[in-house]
Length: 141
Image (cartoon, rainbow, N blue to C red; front, top):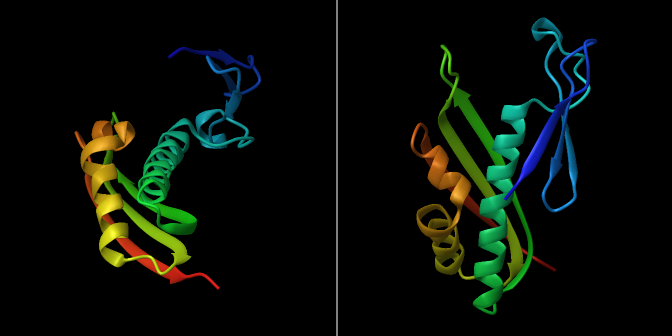
């Protein structure tokens, strides 16, 4: 995996990341840190990437189990250390999984498998953060 991150220049803290898969992500800082608040903070993207990683796993596990999953969202709330490096210290993942007759045991197991076996981002973050999760299942029409 590769990525090239380039600074936008002397008028702020805007950075552009070009990924090895050919995509672009933009990051910026808060005004009090020299940024212009034009894009997500780098640590916000770390959190978003972790949410994407685990949600991907949950959907894939449920689909492979032939469950009628129709939607999956995960709301992440994180706390960071007060001193540098301001690593994540706590992250709560609130999953909402929508589907037809989804067995709660299957959904809980998918979330657990993601966190304990498959999600690389969660595995890295659990080195500094306490990870917790909750699951809500919504019946699809």
